[in-house]
Length: 309
Image (cartoon, one colour):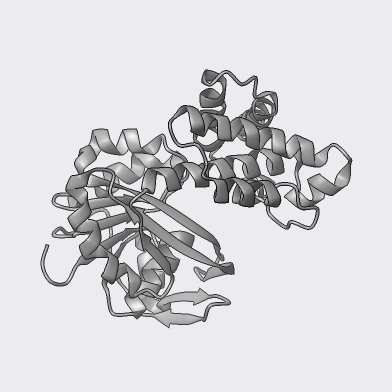
């Protein structure tokens, strides 16, 4: 593993660009695996971050999928689920000896990554951040949340995670080597699936849904209850602090919360319908829940996908 860890970041978009840029600015050995056009842009302008936590412009190292290099200790993946298969093939030549930190939403991607690289080489991960990339390549951080959680899914990975933690901490964002990473991943998915299903189905923020009619809060909370039941059936019932926080957020008439999936939908982009909402629907129904609002949200998203061709 060596004294200095080498990190490969798949992509330099919103999530990968933000965390990777912060790490690179702190002197961590970071390389971005990007498309040629993005590589040219980064060579010309550097990686640019605009954030309430501090702006930065930093020169970065890049490689492309034609020559991704080797000898990396960790590969950070933060792609969308609909790009997962391409992402796997892109990092495969560079993956020997590396631990994969999967910062995707949901859970289902772990099975695919385990099959591709071996479960012993795939860590859990959670990104809590609102971020997007402008047309000019600028990474725009939308709020002050910038949490990066990772952790071992098996005892054999614990020593690596302990060694990685000080490197990740150099980035200055809220990083954590979690001993309960699967619980963390499930809790984020419960929160996200609820927010995505509600905000996409009703085309608004949680606050606007709650305040629209006397039924608004109850409808959102019924989606949350279905998602929490799915988590509990899988052995990851949300912990009391998460349960109380989430119920408060999902019934707040002033909440500005809305999933990035709603932004994607409104601009006509791809959405993670199957991975975030559809998979949760399947699990909620397997747990004995009718999950009618989850079903309505999923159907709405699939009709939207079909309309895109």
